[in-house]
Image 1 (tube, rainbow, N blue to C red):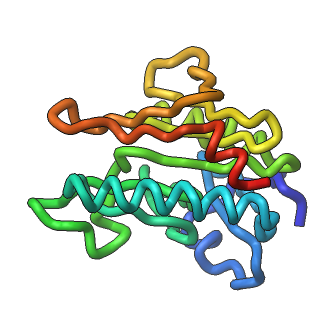
Image 2 (image 1 turned 45 degrees about the horizontal axis):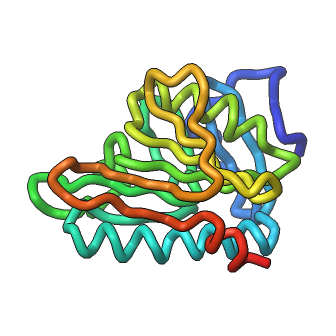
Length: 185
C-alpha cells in the first residue's frame, strides 16, 4: 500500500478496521498515512528517549509517558500514533484509557527517511493546530531535534542540548544530544 492515499477520504472507523499487518495506520484530515515497522536505529533512539522521559515524568508526577501503537484521537475523526508522547494527569490521576488522554504535553516522532513528510508536514500541522505544547522531530541522519510549538513558523533546531519544561515550577529535563546521538552508533 502506498504511503499516501489521496484518491479518497478515509474515516476513523475504516482505519481502525484495517488489518494488524505490521504497518502503522494513521489518519489526519481524511488522509491515510501508512508506514511500515521502523528501522532498528529508529527503535533504539525511541527507546533511549522513552527511558529519559519516563524517569523525568515519574520523578515529577507530571502524567504518564506512552509510546506507539496508541490510536489517539486528538480531534474527532483523526487517528495518530506518535512514537512517544506524554499525557497529563486527569483529575489528579494518570489516564487509563486512550479517550482520556486529550492533547499530550509532548509528542516525539523519530523520522523515518522515506516517510518524513508525515512527521514534518502532515502531523506537525495537525499538532500545531490542536495546540500540542511541544513537538519534537528527531532527525537521526542530521543528528538534530526540531522543536515545534503551536505558533512557530520554523522549528528550533537543537544539536547539542535539548530541554523540556512542561511546568515552570519544576526543573527542566535536559538531554545531552551529543551523547544521545553518539550512544546510537
